[in-house]
Image (cartoon, rainbow over all chains, first blue to last red; front, side, top):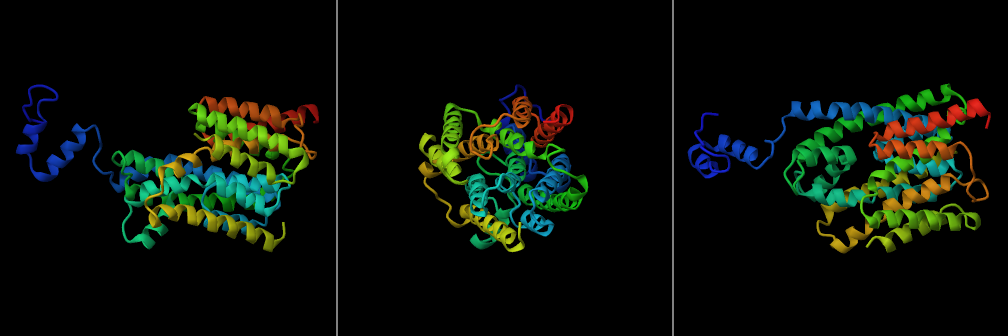
Length: 252
Length: 103
């Protein structure tokens, strides 16, 4: 850059009056500490390692779901229609522990409540009317949302990054699930492989990053305590419902 | 699990997930008080799921290989290991302890 700006912080106004439109816009991104909008190639390069992780996660979900005695077709269908790892994982965990279908739906849906918040955040970055945006918002999962926030401006996630990453991860998630569901029965006794321990291990791993701030810690301790108190003398599902009520109550 | 029951599980979870993701586009302005409170649901539910997974058939905490598996997963998560690493490590710990001690 040959612009003779003498001192850092002194040149912004001058640059804006001398540069042409696109260059000025690009520079203003740099000066605000931000990147210009990501190209398709940049998005795909950034998403590739995430896609590999999602594929492995999909495969392990497929193995676990088949071990929980779900028919393989329903496992793949779930990945196609739900497309949310933690919610699917929670629902299958409830089934594997002997819970009812309603409890499983309840547990999975509660984990997806955060998509109400991310949906609000991405809604104005998506093209089209309300119906089209509500369909495109189905491509938001934790990873694609995080990427769109990284690529976007503060308070405005990048819609293109969300859609490209989301579509890539959607395909990879279904393929992974399919491989896992086909591979699962070949692997043998799920307990011998420690697959029953995979659920509580996964729940701890999902929980840990949420434990920032004393409100979240309070909700977690309260939820676990209520569930443990209710578990010996209530049917499955009630302890989780009790934990949800405590979570809402202790949230602020 | 029987086919119709599995289909019910899939469609039930899918329709609720669809509604949740569509909400932002359909009703742009939820009150902050509502979204702030829902922040407590996930930690409470996940902690409850961990606790319930560690109970036996009678609903009381049951000490077996899942406990060390959860501890290892928690330590890995504290060191910011990716989710899938925590899951596989937990399963490996349980499988290893079962194989060695015939638990």
